Amino acid sequence: MRFPLLVCCLLLASIVTLCTAQTESPPSQADSLLKAANRFLARGATDSARTLFDMVLTSSKPRAAKARLGLIQVDMAEKEWQDAGHRCDTLLKYNPDNLAAHYYAGISWREWGCQLTGIYAWIKSRQHFEALLSKDSLYRDALYQFAQTREYMDDLPEAIALACRQVLLRPDLPEAALGLFHIYRHYISATK
Image 1 (cartoon, rainbow, N blue to C red):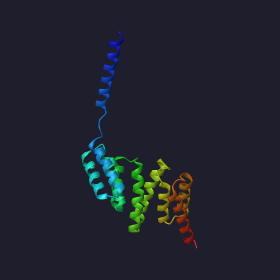
Image 2: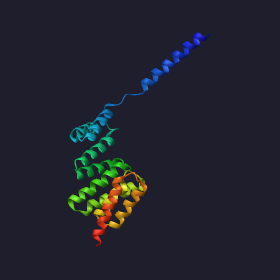
Image 3: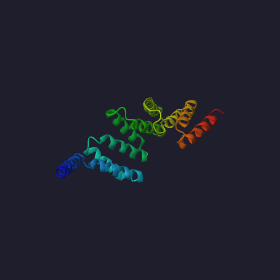
Image 4: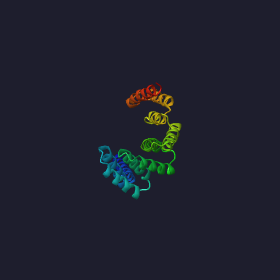
């Protein structure tokens, strides 16, 4: 009586294992391309990363947001601030709550404003940082990045306050602490 029960249990276990193995799909080609593109980007091979992100963007609708975000990071690594800003705006049309897109848009429009010496780009930067911070004030070093935007707009007291908040909320970010001293030195030299 035990032998047939044992055989039935083993047979049932093997069927469940086969069914489970068939429902777990292997990583798609788009996922593999995204991983490879991110590896190239991490190594500084931006041309290769851009090519792979473009391939994912044209071939996989479900992975389009990740590919767009990758292309934004490539543009930023190459200091193509205007291109990065426009890509962020495009991504935000499809997903207005994408925190990374707001973060990168804030940085890219700020830097583009430095090249143009134009307040318009800094206002766009401010809008993106305000949208990001209204959703998540602990996202990366967003408060410090926003502080830099305010510094460029010559609102030094607000820049200092934002950088202080960043240091208090995220003491693990040394760039923000160093940046706070830089902004403060700028304030002292501007008020002499």
